Every structure is written in C-alpha cells, then in structure tokens.
Image (cartoon, rainbow, N blue to C red; front, side):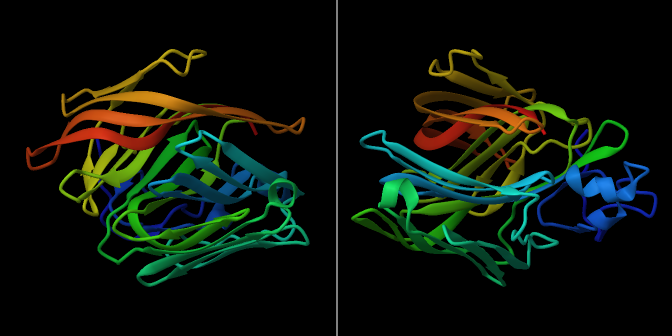
Length: 344
C-alpha cells in the first residue's frame, strides 16, 4: 500500500496531473505549481493554491512557532509561544490581502521565505546543512515584543517525511515534515530571553504546497523530543483528507531516520479535546497515549476563508516498533495533536 518514491522528477506533468504518488525520505520532486490545470481560466488558479512554511521549536521551557503562508486569497503570518510551566499562551497574526509582500521558495530544500512590513519581519533561510529562523516583531502583545534568531541543524542525510497524494480528480497535496532538528540561538519575549542549546532544544518544519477541496478536515500529531538515553525521537501522524491508499505521512523518527508506519487511528473525543487521545496502527507497531494539558484554539473568519483548529499540547507515553524490530519506549514526550476544520 505504501509506495516509496526514489526517483527525481516534476511534481506535475504537462496536463497538470501528479507525475508520481507516494512518500519519500528526502524531497524528490520539483514543485512546478505553474503546471497546475484545475481551472479553465488559468488566472483564477493562484487563488486556490496554498503554500506555507511552519516552523516549531520545542525547548525545556516553551513551545515557539512562526509561520508564513500564502493561501491564495490572502496571506497569513503568525507567531505564538506557550510557556509550559505557567500554561500562558500568546499569539498574534497578520492577514495580508492577496499575500502581497510574501515570498515563498519553489522547493523545500533551498531559498528564502520572507515577509516584512512596518509591524513585523520574518525570514526563513535554507542553507546546505542548516535552516535559519529570524523573527522581529516589536509591537507583539501590546509592545512586549518578540524576537528570535535560531539555527536548526539539518544535514543532507537527515531524513524527513515527504508525501504526494491526490485529493479528488484535480487537486493534490505535496508536503514535507522534518522532525528533530537540533536548535541553537535565542528567543526573547518581553523581558525574558531564553538561550537554546542543541542537546536540549529541537525544531521541526511543516512545508506544505497544494490545492485542497474548499471544505477540508484533517488531524495532525507531531512531537520532537528526547529519550532517557539522549537520542532524539520524533512523531509525525496524520489523516483526514486525500487518497491515502498509496502513501500516508505516518512515521517515527529516531536519530534522523524515518521508520514508516502504514495507517494510524486517531482515537479521541471531538468536542472534548482535553480527554486522553489514543494512537494505534494497523500493523501493531504503535501504541501511544497522549495526555493534553493545553488547548490552543485558533479561529479565522474572513468570509471566504474560515478555519477552526484545536491544537492540543500534551505528553506522549507508550511504545513504537521500528523497522528493524526494535521497540522504543516513550514517556512524557511533549508534543501536540490537532483537529482542523477549514473552508479555504
């Protein structure tokens, strides 16, 4: 059922169809979105193509995230941070009409992602073995301000979860998730400055490109943390939309290597998100319980664009069996799990 892509090529053929469908440990396909052919009036297509770069950092004290997105009708730039000890969550975002001033790279392994105006400046840079995050938002949270300079180590042999799947007849999803990137630098929020050390702090990237159905739903779960012996452990689990018969994004990441899972069940109570979530797979390789401690509720209502996400932060405990049969035990690894409804 799960087809691994090993050969390079274009994402879309000359007729706008997916040239390959499957998953990969490294990005193989050129993201030639200009070949998309889902409207007869070509100029309308840009309003339906979605592109985003979402970075997340786990430190011993906090979760920090910065995103630059172009959703076609509008751009969305936002930053949020969660203090684990106090539970304080702060978030601020900007809606950019038609995405003016947003620049996103063609592919996930090179280029710059940039947005800057009088309120905020965000820049994500990709270099050969490193990804750099710059955030400067002086007026964030009524003038408290937030600023970050972070380097994420990402050597060429570090594996990631890349999937290419169809959504209906004309739409598609091309996505890359990178977990467990050692983070170094600092985050300053108000009068607090936190120094990031790579043996304690890990980053991740959600890089998405595609065309969805106007009304969409999905679940996503992710974590990047450490086992008691110091090895970096990551999770990426997802379901809810698209044709997953040839590829899912489900995997465990240990020390930079992807261990692919097939189908994973999200067992939770929609509407009562603080109850424990349970994750199992169809091959009996995964059994995790997720205990939430914080609900990040994010709503966007711009008429034509409307979304609601419950992103639950919590702790994962359980076990996973790797490709070689080794069983790893997770205990209280901090991560998140979400339910997302969107009209976009």
